[in-house]
Length: 499
Image (cartoon, rainbow, N blue to C red):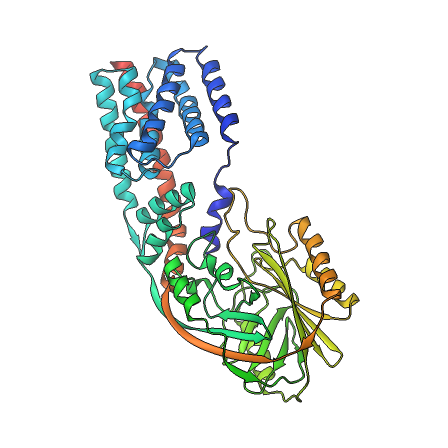
């Protein structure tokens, strides 16, 4: 999924509408000093694009219309200076209208209007026909499958999703190659607080499918803990997420708490909170941690609390984690009395998606705080700072993140940031600690329930075939696009010159 997520970093960002309109118009006005036809061309592009919003459901707002008009006009400039032709950019405009609209069959005829109005003759018709043929050929080249991935479907749906933020486009694509997976949905109650976990993954990005999972399962006095899972288990649509949410039951069997303990490995450590019939095992990374899968009947938590750029767990790391989990499951412990409290603060920054929280547990003077950041991983320096802050008020902090992907791709040129990546996170952490300092802990009743639900997920095939498609097809298709655009440009210039 990192390859798909990185698309967002490569997409351009543009100024707000009023600035973009002014810049676009003034630029066209200045270009008209070289040839007045450029101003007319800009005006026609602008007007036709506004009409296209209604006529073909072109998914452009005013600032994008302004930017498109400016961009096409600037690219057209050299051709106009050579021979007065504006049709050199037809191939590019045709593709923009096609991919950015819903009524695709009308996109090319409507995009032809500015060229025909400026130059209503046979040569213009011929050049537009050549451009349209290039578009058809290019779309045929895009219409190939790499495993379960049809590249044209992905591009069409991704562009519309990016323009509108409407998840239905990407979810339609994901559902076309979805696999079924049955996973567990767990709920641990700590007095009135709820700790929820699923075997599914809170992705892929933004508001698509499982990316809303954490938000929907963290309402009220609930917190979400990330399970050992992967992007292959991303729910493909909001409908599948609803199935997960409706399956959560939080009125289960009572649990008898026992004294917690810690086990340390080379690269990871686990904290185990044992109960009579269940164990909560939190896996923390010493230097790095990311999605992993282990087999266990226990309530295992991937703390997702040590961000390292480009890190991906290898077999050795997973084997170490599995060994630590197995040891935690087998070690004996004595019953203990527990007092607890849940402290939660709603908070949103460039890295935090919705809240921070702390589950405070006092085992007869041995105090723990499970500190939850609703974010995608945790900056290690920030984590150490949080651990020190809680240490000052007498708690051993176990910092976790929800691995929430709701912030991934929210803005162009911005990848997700781990907790601590925004300066506001540090202030919020201090507020959380101050709230915990004064929290009233009460005698605690624990209960646990577990359900199973079968839903559609992205699956390993889609992830694998997406990577193959990027590696084997993307560069060639981009190069072909540039070749068609350049050929169309040159042909338009040459044919018009000959005519």
